[in-house]
Amino acid sequence: MTDIGTRFRALHTPGTPFILANAWDIGSAKLLAGLGAQAIGTSSAAHAFTLGRPDGGTVSRDEALGHAEDIVRAVAVPVSGDFENGFADAPDEVAETVRLAAEVGLAGISIEDTRFPGQEAYDAELAAERIKAASAAARALPGDFVLVARADGVMNGTYDLNEALRRVRAFDAAGADCLYVPLPGGAEAIRAVCAATTKPVNALAAGPDTTLTQADFARLGVARISLGSSLARATQRLVVEVAGAMFDAGDFSALAPAGTKIDFDALLHKGGA
Image 1: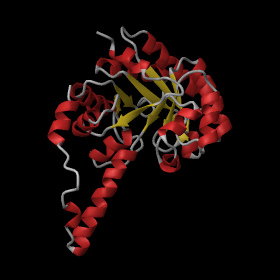
Image 2: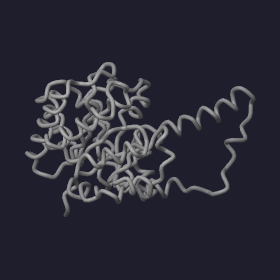
Image 3: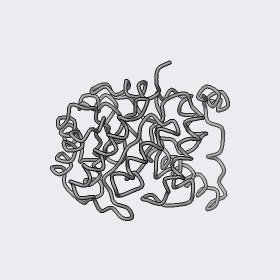
Image 4: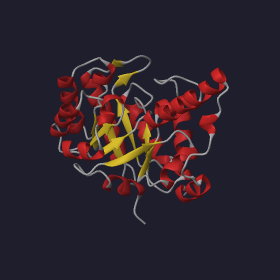
């Protein structure tokens, strides 16, 4: 049987992007897998929302590992962990996070260059050292493991695209398997990220970049499209709209059955491990 990490790595083909469907609990993971997701990602923000917390360093490593393990056990497709900054500043602790992530069955994780709490970016040299340590830990594992290095400074407003590209190259050299600059500034910025490395690039379908189609991302050279917390936020938006109509106007019409009947039980069964 093919190693789960090997299966996951095989999905990452530049110019032929797959959708990494970010779930927030067992039910959403099984539903997305039942709908055809080739791989599931956790979402640090969406997970935090389920705990009644804001995004950004509010979930512990143990909580993230337990959450990820629940999802890994629930679905048959590969699962990747959105593990924020690796839940540590020191490179050796980030390496330990990689080892623990593999132990719960994850096919890979992403590590960003943000120092929590807040949105301060790690110094570029330390950021690269953290990825180097994480990569060494990943390569020492018995199975394959896809390590994604994130440069979040453009999205967070802490550095510009040129610095992000410099970090992408440094993370590539440090051993990252996939590179990721969330919301770098539109299509041409995404193209520049893809041109900065020969390795697979992840792009985020969120905010202004939701105007791009899967075919658009493919033409830019992207290998993977993740959703982050976008799907969770879309679900929250629907709840707010429907509940607002109920509580403000006593209007329950949005709860009426849709035109197409959805067999959720069948989808959950189909998407389960």
